[in-house]
Length: 145
Image (cartoon, rainbow, N blue to C red; front, side, top):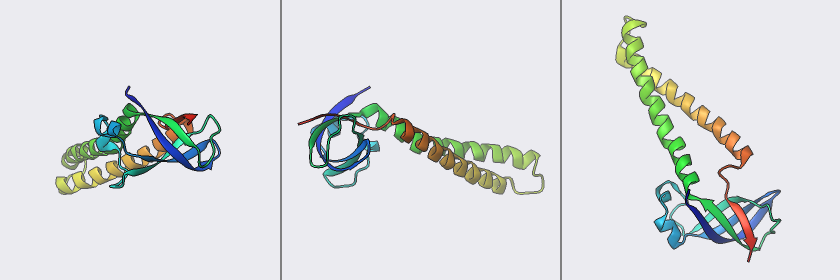
């Protein structure tokens, strides 16, 4: 996994989590996950990081960002819904021809696709809450500089 060290300033502390304002750096350009990182067109990013060292607002810190984590999150957010949608369409075609006889198979297919897409989004939301509690994808503050 590609781990990057970045620098930033803590703008807010919320318990064991700190909000860091960091600037895009050259390591962002070489990161394999740069296309999945959306921080807008601004050169500043706001990042929530685990504050295990007790840094306070205004502190300049060094934190780690796992590049692979961003890539995995991108796969979950983009690929899973597409796969569920396509799976729903295929199952809808099969069900439209065998179970829902008399209905247009394309209509059944479309409904199945949308239902499966909604299920995927609810599943991703639940998965995100589980990951948020575990802190598995959250950057870590290493030290105050």
